[in-house]
Image (cartoon, rainbow, N blue to C red; front, side, top):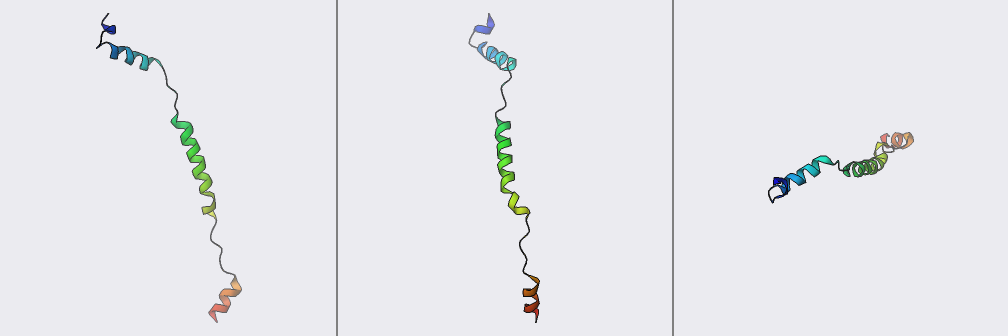
Length: 61
């Protein structure tokens, strides 16, 4: 009977929250963000093009 009074209402809510497992909505969003971040980092692995050897040899003379 005490579960259905005003103070007992919080116990009912606590039992319902403890009894059900809520889906994790952050995991798919985190996976999407990681995939987008990895796509943006693909161009950073390529080194900058260097000057041809002939041009540097001419500059030294």
